[in-house]
Every structure is written in C-alpha cells, then in structure tokens.
Length: 286
Image (cartoon, rainbow, N blue to C red; front, side, top):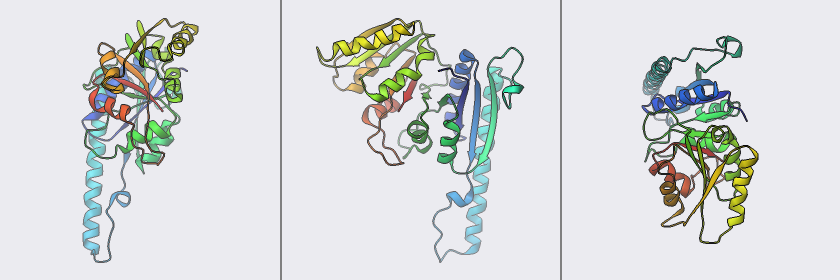
C-alpha cells in the first residue's frame, strides 16, 4: 500500500490545527496530497424539531442564526488550513496534473454543503489515510470520528495531545491476533518500513500463544522489517499495559474496536481508553 492521498475533515475547532500539522508532516514523508475538507452544515439538517406552535418568524430567525454559525465555522476552518499550509510550505494542487514538477507534498481545500457523516464516508473511501484529531472528552457522540473509523474501510491517523509533526522513528504495534489487528498491521507497513525501531507488543499471561506472536515478526521480516517482540501482562488492564509499553514510542498501531454494530458506534474499552488517556499518536484500523 502506498500513501498518496490523505483526507483531513475539518470542523472549525481548535483541534483542526493538530490534525493539519500531523497530516502535512506525514504528507512530506510520503510525498502525498492532503485534501482538507469542511462540510458546511445546512440549516434544514441542523434545526431542532419544529412544532406546530412555532411561528414562521421564529423559524426564520433560527435559520438565519444557523447560517451565520455555519459560515463562521467554515471561515475559521479555512483560515486554520491556510495558516497551517503556509507554515508547512506546501503548494496548492487541485488535481494530480497540477502538482509541481518533481513531485512532493501538496494540499487542497474543499468546502461542501451536506451531511457530515455521509460526505466523510464518501471522501474517506477514496483516500489512503484519514487524519482526525481525537474527539473531545465528554463531547458526546464523536460522529465524524466514528464514521471515519468504522465505515470508510481506511486507516485513521490520530495525532497526539499537541500540535506536533508525526514522527516514525520508533513504532509499537499492538497485536492480539484479531482481524482488526491484522488489518492495522497491513496498513501500517508504509510507516513501519521507515521506522528505525519496530516493536510488536502483546498483552498476555505467561506462556499464552508465544508461537503465534513470533509469527508476526516473521511476517514483517518478509517485508524487510526487523521487529522486536515484547509480551507484557495485561495488568491492571490491557489498555494501561499498552500505554506503558509504548511510553517512548512515536506511534502506536492498533486495531479499532467497537461494542456495537449500529451506525452510531460505541467505541470499545481499549480504543476509548487510548483516545482519552494516551498522549502519543495512534494509527487505527477497524
């Protein structure tokens, strides 16, 4: 898998800066194109239920208020994109034919009206990587985040706790033998190939499936990646053990899990813990 197109959904919040910083630094490594996208909410899609007793004047007032708020968020998102792009010195490219001679990383802006979930899915399925900052703690249902992770079929790069470029020197891969972990390992190969140190971490009791864990490093060796293997006991919990094992890592690769098959996914315990407690960047794949 090569990384040529990176999607960054922006919502006009402070978290956009972290996502863009991570995306632009990653694009430089892979000489990829960063497509920043802001979905502009339409009043009809965001207005509360209008009852029979609501006057036309009040409805109009709500429509105008929603339009102003939507325009303000779009303006902030665009301003954040332009500032981050200028700082990263990335040229604008509208399509592959407009890339500068000699290649290199590029960026583009897209503002489109509609339903955020639907448009993130549509754009995300035609990207090699999606970059999204972790949902704010206590913000309720992290709609775009869950949509990107569970419905696009693409890997999700989540920046760390600060707006910093993504580094790939030391990478930890969380392995539990699941399909999600296998998909995460596969999509991480371009990152692992550039790392100076790769460590496969398993959380298991003594003697549990040691041979199966060793097969992971053998698989990576077929890709020319020399990886170490480390087994840690799952105490006081799997998530806590993984965080402790990845203390000095630049990136943690893991499968993204949920406890629900409904459209509004409920993040699994380990995934949610990582998003709320871990400060290092994550590469997730469902």
